[in-house]
Length: 276
Image 1 (tube, one colour):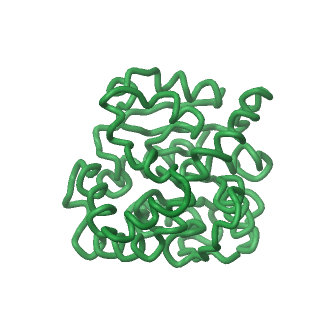
Image 2 (cartoon, one colour; image 1 turned 90 degrees about the vertical axis):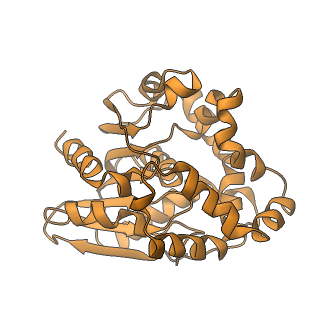
Image 3 (tube, rainbow, N blue to C red; image 1 turned 180 degrees about the vertical axis):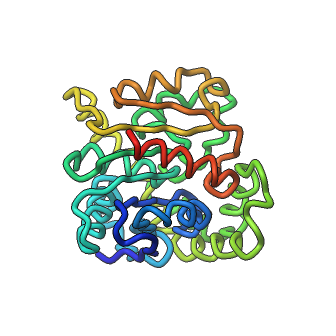
């Protein structure tokens, strides 16, 4: 299993791994990475199934489990010489980061999460008409075949709709970046669907087992997100506090693509996290 990763920054600085979201690639971190690079080694992989990374066939639910995707990231960092690192994820990447931090507490020193709640909690907080923003979760949870066909037959319209709907500042996604996201996503429909399908099955099982066992995140955690708690009627900070005793929960006025819309705010939150 090979991951593509962009690596740069200060070779003598502590490593920070940044995991992208949907429907994006490592490119989403271009502004934040540049801000962190002066003091840190910055590693920006494409997740399994995305971008230029390998896209294995989903021969079973475990292939795109967040446990498997997290193990990819830990192995890639180790191959680069980093047995311990800070980990920050956005959207899908944040779910991978969350799983990595639970499964590899001796490896992940700090955890940053942008604009999600854990997989198990996602299904619990989605209810009523406001939850229509997440219709794609239900579409891609369906058995193999129909979701892949529907999405592949309208890939640009499907993936582009999220870039349009979720951007607080459309100018943060210039035409060449948008085009690259659409190209990369259209080339990865089966694996993207498999990633989401896992989050309606095996990922829930893994999260529930940890919750029932009382497992918690051992490292400092910062969550930066839009005010989904108010919009969907739940206590976002409270949800995260169940998992993260050492929690800083921040709200942002930026849109979902906050690393591109508000890179200084995001980089500042990461810098503050690394000082804890």
